[in-house]
Image (cartoon, helix red, strand yellow):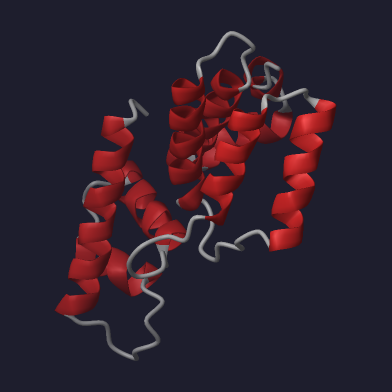
Length: 167
């Protein structure tokens, strides 16, 4: 399965590259991880790493994760085993990953932070407070230094993540 080359030529994907370059890089890197994960010669450990990297990248594109239900997980397991002839151990490891609950505080505002960082990259003269006023979704009438620091720290975390993944 090779999605990326055919996707690069679509007008919508080209428009995304022009209007939202950071979002485009993240989407492209996430799809690349999927392409790599579904290569037939890949080792199980590499497959798990690519799926984990895909999940990390995709998590910055949307704010509300919808964890799969138990029924969805079982349906996926059956499909992987029957349709794709996946070995038992690989299908079971995949299901285990789907069932695993995230530790710590739920992810939130990741998309907002990605958009703020993108604006910062497009216009480096914007201050973090200007970006906070524009993007913070805390609900306060007046955003303060805590709001600014939260946006700035999450943006730095995104930047470190993208650097670590070579995006």
